[in-house]
Amino acid sequence: MNRSRIAAAAAALLVTGLAGATSAVAWEPTKAVEFIVPAGTGGGADQMARVLQGIIQKHELMKQPLVVINKAGGAGAEGFLDMKGSAGNPHKIVITLSNLFTTPLATGVPFKWDEMTPVAMLALDEFVLWVNAKSPYKTAKEYVDAVKDGGAAKFQMGGTGSKQEDQIITAAIEQQTGAKFTYVPYKGGGDVAAQLVGGHVTSSVNNPIEAVSQWRGGELRPLCVFDNQRIPLKEPVADGKSWNDIPTCKESGLDIEYLMLRGIFMPAKATADQVSFYVELFKKVRATPDWQDFMAKGAFNTTFLAGEEYRAWVAKEADRHRALMEKAGFLAK
Image (cartoon, rainbow, N blue to C red; front, top):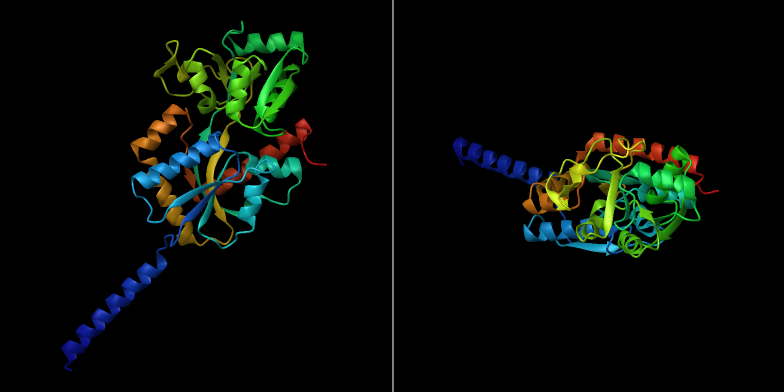
């Protein structure tokens, strides 16, 4: 073999080697991916997980199927402990809500958020103070003043779970205003909305997606949103009013801000390539009209974070939740 042929053969071998190295670096799932939801069916996290599953399947964004599995036991502890025990398994992801912080603090279950690998924040879910549309209260101030006068025997706050997000907000309202509610826990946001419509509780702090149909139906009335700015969506939803017409609670005299994480984590020991695959996957999801419609329907805060920025945000929120729960007396003894 002459030198030119040897050189050509060597070059071909080098290209082949580089191609092999490139394919070895890139990673993608080789079997079905379990998508853990640490909450019950029908709630906000479950709805989002199933929307994600549908978009990924519809647009063929992943070769392997994504299988949604609800593990709601122990206020989500079942799902988190499953993730904790799955270190090194890249075929399992979890969608988190704020029970990522609250459940370990409230129950003492042996789990911390940093025992998983942060992937991406998909959005933040808003909280809205709702009352029955038949009630006389048109503003948050009117309602809180009535609660201060009437007390816990007369006014009830319905919420999802105990010592979780809804009760944390309720405790914050009580601490700031001196009002006292009877807090009534239910299994999910759908139940809460139904109980408020039925007059079994006098208010709730449901997420928009959990109560929007009742607002459209003239059964519930939003009073304020627990964000530092109004929801930017200006298309009319009910009675000619849009999400943007709902004042912030701070505008109404309640200086309380609380949003809920809708984020993705992998088990511990995930590699950079594995994390990158899922980050890019969810970026593709976010670019679809289906996702944008879902974000608008649920009036989500569409903030997206990944990498160190996401990890830093989660760490800060973990500290904030500990402070909130300690102040409310919700920490496990």
